[in-house]
Amino acid sequence: MTRSRMFSALILCAGFAASGTAFAKTCDVEIESNDAMQFNKQNIAIAADCTEVAVTLKHVGKLPVAAMGHNWVLTETAAFMPVATAGASAGLAADYLPKGDARVIAHTKTIGGGETTSIKFPTSKLKKGGDYTFFCSFPGHWGIMKGKLTFS
Image (cartoon, rainbow, N blue to C red; front, side, top):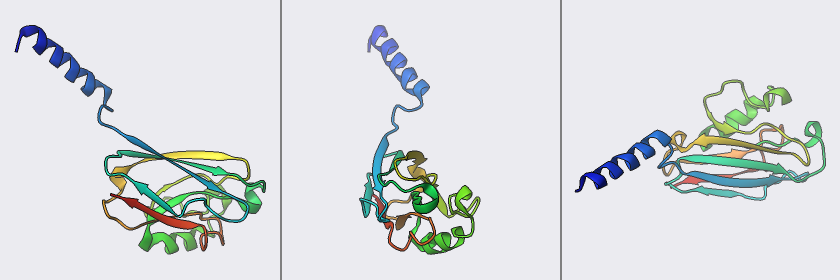
């Protein structure tokens, strides 16, 4: 290898190392909720090469947050019902989630009609082939506003 090529290779490697995101891949997920207590998706698949997930929740309804608020919450399926049940008493200010609950992998804030919210979380919080449920934790909504997330 010539001295010039070696220098170029070192510069290239230093650039990747400095960026810190040379091998990062953010995978975008868009999901809608409505005034009929529905998500427009029941399944979300995250590819194994994703290092981060960016979730955007759009409430396409018209009702205010206090009447028909929605959020997007992700837990392992085994924790879904216990988290949803515990969240009912937490209130709207806490997004109907128990404060600091480690079973919650990720969640958006609760929004009303016409609003949009987004979150990002690392896929390092997920296990390939794991069993995950996403849901709205607004009281009474989680019974029908839920779906399956896969990471493989």
